[in-house]
Image (cartoon, rainbow, N blue to C red; front, side, top):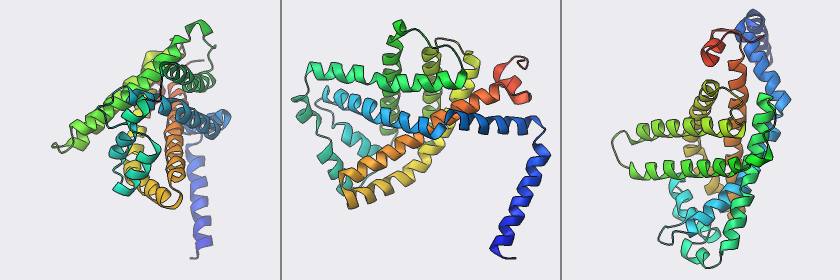
Length: 287
């Protein structure tokens, strides 16, 4: 059997399988997930979120690193977490100044501007949640939520990085880090939409969605630990700092895609008419 015939046979088997489950709750759930992902324009939303993260969170973390002159700096944190080679580490260090060097060039006004501009990521994330859950937009008077969200994400990143460093070389270090990271991200992605949506979605549903996001981010992190250093090494060798930037933006896009997609999947599961929906929402099927 040739390749064309084999592909046609697989397609026919796939069509028969879909027809067999289409009228079940699993089929309806899958159909809704695909429809909602297309309605939300998930790739465009993820790219916007990744761009906002790159222009908001990363500069704020750079500013935070300057407040601790004795710390090796943000560039060293990235290099250590990705296991980059000395050559790539040097390229990254050349692009990201040391804390002591940057401290002299960053004033109080720059820190304030970085903090307030960082809320653009929170606003982009809020739009994703509003579009996904179809709830009214909160009042602008509660804009403090945007800053809290940014701080929560940055603290989570720093805590996970510190935990990885503290447990380096310990027995079952990878397992402990994976469990701790899942717990931290579950807490973060439960609190973040709860704040941005002003408690308009049930906490039980948010916990389920957050756990799904945390698990997917853990799987993505394992894959990224293998793939990202290779891409950054190759990009730095061919294009210098631009290669590192492109690779890092691509990584942020993958993370943003997980966040957006799991949010859509979480709502679809919560409103499913099957047993999974009853478990997630803990209530009868909505009308």
